Length: 495
Image 1 (cartoon, one colour):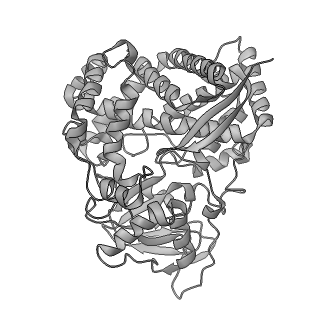
Image 2 (cartoon, rainbow, N blue to C red):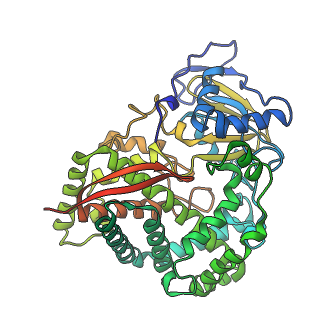
């Protein structure tokens, strides 16, 4: 949960001799040298790594540097550093004004930067550089992204019925466990429902009816761990964990059999999409590895992290919000003849705002990277900074989307924040999809191909929840990725 310690305060700048007009032309900002340092070779990156994971924690790590240097654009090292990343040096962008430079592919490059200053072995993805690691300037980027657009379009008629079916099963599982034990963990039922839904909606194949059975989520978790371990904390003793997962890559052969099981499911289930890939000039094998990654890492990973976060923020907001959501959702469905559709959901402004606010206050992917293609100027609220070609840029999204100069009550979950004309104007500052919420993904940009799909299923999750229940109570814990939710009670719909 957001900590008050992590609040980003406005910076007071001293005016230098060199001034440039801001983008609006209304004020002039000082041109400043980017503050911060990288420390001694080898020692500096390890010190920053220990501070980031253990001594301070992620938010305090950045907050302390903002306070020290009185700037939201700073130089620092980012994990993992030695010996996994050859160059941990970055320019950190820690406000909502400087952050969007990361999306401008005319000025920055995204090649091999999906996970940051290191890239996991391609042995974990069948020997291929997956779409997420390609820059839009690379020829395969366009073809592979077009394939994902085809997947989304070809499966669109299955999304509503399969989501309802899979999450009806989830709520039954949770209710049964509540009746038996007095509480229910949301984690495993959500993961199984999410993976079943994606298999059924995308490919018309129910994973539990195949050789995978119910193993899909656990196989994915292990495979993802081998890719993200260098930037995760598993809760092990500090120095043991740092040596085990932050210093050397985990050997990919340990998940080879697990990955093969996932690959076989996709190869057998995605026949029509693989046929389309061949027509586009992509081999079935390369297409299959990309479909697996997009489904398991990107979309399933997002549902695994974001759905518990939605529950956390709505749950903690209390019964008044619950009642308001239930009334809005049920009345719209009733006025649409009992049917749920895209058009009906557009008539639910509170529900839509709540989902956007969850994306804003706790974006599921906090870190984004890019490398300067050319010498460029980056503008924060207080100053302009010169960046040289080849320098690595890092954006910490929670500070960008909780920028107090852009958002009032930035640290608070405000359910109605994005309602109305003025509220909708703020959507351009919501960046969870590797781009502004007001823009749409194209083959020319790195914005998430499934952006609209992820917003849709997040809305469906809230709608399905409040179709069934007036309110609920939860207990919030922590996990390696996102929140660990225990459901304590579900109050069934009474109107």
